[in-house]
Image: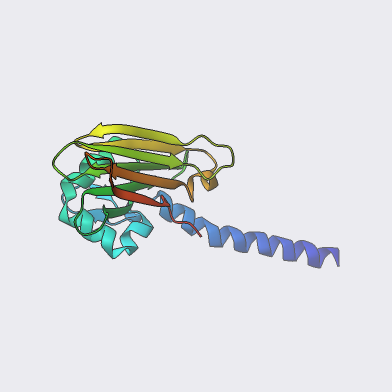
Amino acid sequence: MRNVIRATAAGVALALALLTAPQAMAQDSPSSGRRIAGAGVLLSEEGAKDARTRAIAEADPDAVAATASLCGSGYKLEYAERLPDARRFGTLFTYTKFTTGTPGVCVLFDNNTGSAKHMKLKLCPNKTGATCKVDEGTYSRYAGPLKYENSNGRYVQCSMVTALMWDANGRALINRVMSATLCD
């Protein structure tokens, strides 16, 4: 009976290793994402699946390249959204890094109005008691970047981002709260 249990345990361990190894290798591989033409930036797996993110990235590769460079190396475009809608007063960009080393999330809030606006960008990690990072002020270009990196990737996943923009009278033009990464 002991031999059967040992053989079963060894088989389960081997199966788990085989099932998880290809996923880890795919995340670390630079060819696992789709490159945005003209930007030199990779889309994350989720970014490549999202038609809206791909369309925004392909329509404005210069903005994607500029915001990605602010996040640093290893980050891939996870999500892009025009805010508050097709009028596009701002664009929220989220980038993720889930390679070996330290996983991370990086967010930027691009001002697309052509004039300085009071903006606030907040990034809160998925960790009880953690301090949120905030960038608030009057910006003509963008708020951020805000980054959260942690060796425990689960604190990076399901991080929450808030993007706010006000007009000169203090009326909210944009008030968007969402998960900065894929979240089950």
